[in-house]
Image (cartoon, rainbow, N blue to C red; front, side, top):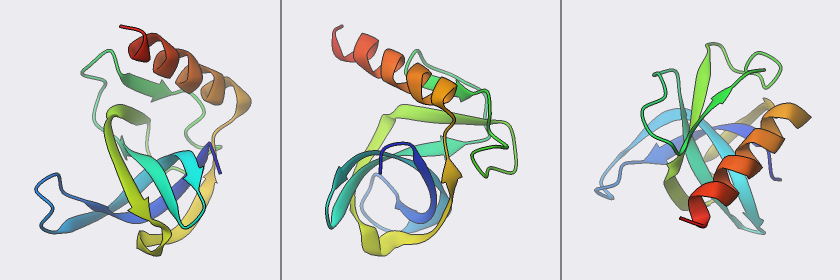
Length: 103
């Protein structure tokens, strides 16, 4: 569901291998989902969203959702649900997504 934070085996862009890391669910496609990488690295691009309420979302560190690091993934790569973004962070993700998609 949109806004859920999951721990998953996030695939490398090369298609070979993966890394266990948190991800944000952007679109629910039934057996699949469009997810983006969540990282504790600092924001680097206009598509990065700093999550103000990262602890409430179940994350262990100050985190950034990288909206330009997308994957359509089978739900089988999800290990567990960590939490959900707060309404404020959900609104920020929507606003940045809509802004970036119109450019």
